[in-house]
Image 1 (cartoon, one colour):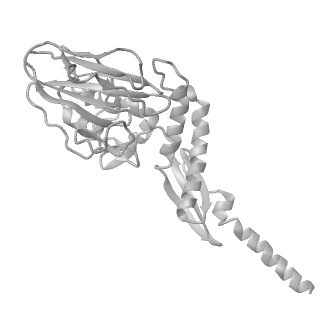
Image 2 (cartoon, one colour):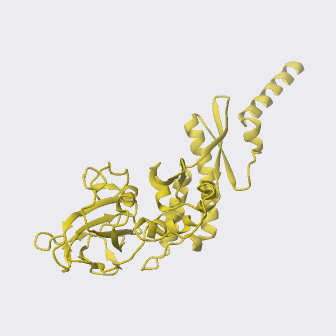
Length: 338
């Protein structure tokens, strides 16, 4: 009886040890470069295990971001501290889509997995995307894409506007360069890839009323062309990167301001906050001596105020590539939450 009891005890003990998972999961000893975070997860399915590991990494990164909230805060005209909290939540969601499997296994019907996340800054990662031995240097900022802070910063890595393209990735945005894809952190998205310049070489853009708008209020856009000839186009770009063509290749016959929308038919454009903390939209006007081609692509999958089936919508990345050297002017529209 003693022998039988001893055997049962050993079996029970081994069973309990088995419940802890593989050795690498129990010990959490998978190591990589110092900039790599490793998260461990378990679940009844591999999908549940991956989600568990992703949550662990998201929590780790979220703590890091929260402790340096001033570094990621995007202050709007209202100066609300809610922007910092909003950015932290975006970072956490972003992490879930940018993970690399390290190891996985199954024990006792439970799946175990280890996922890795490259915790380097976006620009540090882009060091891998240098264009060969090209000499870094400042880009000549003529077109809208070349005028972005993003293009200016990339030029010091030898990456110029024609070298990169914006693409949708897992509900977010990424930069494609040299056959590699680099996810763009949400905290970098707006400040690096949007720029405000209300007047540019005679092209003038006015949004009225000015200042911060409450969600639901209407506003109007006035565009003054730089010459008495040429063609004007007008775009609305949401913070999520969905672009709506408001006006395409309208012939210019004078230097009188062009009002959009038509005041005789419409009250104006409606300011719509797509997040509880408010939204930042952009109005972009272009002038060109000849008609410009407009991108014709499916609209991006994003939560925006514009109808997904609207044939005038397309992605911000396609807009950047289509503008080329067109003269442009832009104005931000700040919208308070409801």
